[in-house]
Every structure is written in C-alpha cells, then in structure tokens.
Amino acid sequence: MDTYDIILRSNPGLYEVEIPDFDVHFRIKGSRRDAISLAAEHLKTAIQVRLSLAKELPEPSSIKTGESDTEVVTLAVEIPLPLEGLLTVEQAMQILDVSQSRISHLIRDGHLLAVKHGRRKLIAQQSLEAYLLTPRTPGRPKRGYTYEFINLKSELEEKL
Image (cartoon, rainbow, N blue to C red; front, side):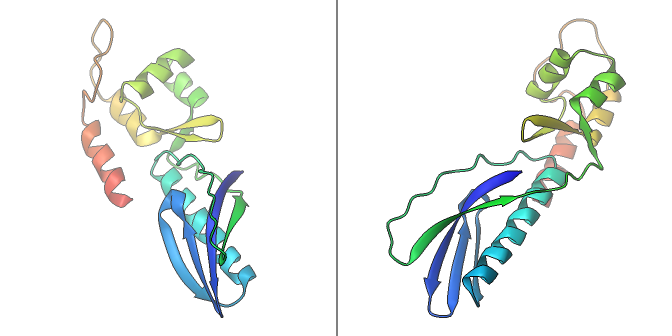
C-alpha cells in the first residue's frame, strides 16, 4: 500500500488539489469527498504509469501548511502491480543463474533497470533481455551502459 499526502484548498464550491510528490495539480467543482476521490484516482494512475515504465516511486514527503483554507490529507492507495514487463529479483536470478548480490550489482551499475515497490525491487524485462544479448567477457563488469540499454532507457523516460 502506498501512502502520500495531498494538499486540499477550498474555495466556495471549488477545490484545488495538489499532489506534490507527483507534480499533479487540478481543480474540481463539487464536494470535499469528490475532490479526495479524484485525487486518489490521479495518484493511482501516476503510480501505475511509473511502475509500468520501471521508474522509481518518489519517497512520500511530509507536508505542513499553516494556511487557513488549506488542509493536508493523507491518501493510502493499493495499486495492483503491472506484472507484465516486470520480473522479481528471484526470477531474474533464475534466468541469469546468478546470486542476489550479483543482481544488485547489475542494477547498481546500470545494466538492469529496476523499480522499487514497497520493499521489493522489480526488474524491467526489456533490460534483462537486452543484457542477455550482450557478449560476456571475463572479469568484473564495467560500470555504466555497455550495450544498447541507452536507447531503452531513453524510450522509457520519454513515455513519462
């Protein structure tokens, strides 16, 4: 379950909603409940987009405000993981036949693209397939992008 704070500003008959962690702003006519419900939908969508693109979720920030017409509301949303295109670390370990620490090194060095969801890391299947297509050489891997992963990463960033 993901929990983020939103800022809710009320004017007569109009609510202005801001989700600062995802840079989302919108206005809605209606009740406070309508504004919070729509904010939850926007938050779910923003999280799902980031997960499907294997982007890391922002850390929830704690918001404080002293304005009289402004309140901070904490939203907790449950997001079903878009498992298509994402692999668990255990699955990647089986495919590559390596240890968990080796997977961590490949992620850290930029050879595999991973997203953290809660306490779990999920690996983009495309990055694993691209890594498998690269020739293996003896010795320690070099840091950085050593294969056609640069194009994949730029494609994913453009979608966001």
